[in-house]
Length: 137
Image 1: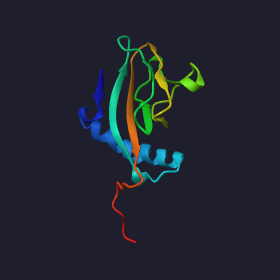
Image 2 (image 1 turned 120 degrees about the horizontal axis):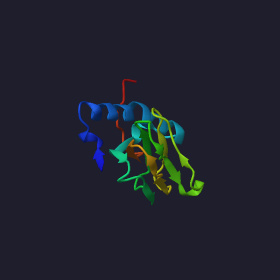
Image 3 (image 1 turned 45 degrees about the horizontal axis):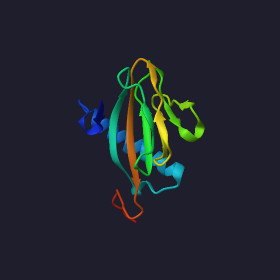
Image 4 (image 1 turned 60 degrees about the horizontal axis):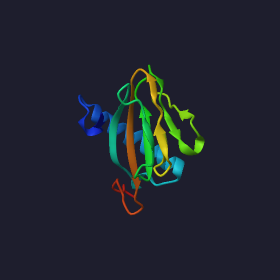
C-alpha cells in the first residue's frame, strides 16, 4: 500500500524530491539549527490511508528526523497523533509539512471516511557530510 516516491509516475517523483530539497530540508535546518548541506533524506514514500488501511499504530521511526505532508483534502479523521500529546491528531493542510524527531512515538490517526494520501520521508543529519560543493570564496 506504500509506494516509494522514486516510482511515482509522470514526473511526480522529480517534483516531490525537488520540493523536499528546496523546501523541506531548509525548513528543518532552520527549525533545528542545522547546516542544510549536512541533511539528506534516506527514504521517501507515498502512503494511502483508506478503509483497508485507515491508520497506523504508535511507533518510532529509525531516523533522526521525519516529515510528512498531506497531498489531498476530502477525507475525515486522519493526521498524526503523538503519544506525549494524547489522542489529538495534528492535521497539517495541503502545502504544509509536519516535521519531528524520529524517536518521538507517533501514529497515523485513522481516516474515518474518504482517502488520505501523505508523502512521508526520513532525514539524516551528518555533520561530516556536505551535499553541496562549496562555491567560490
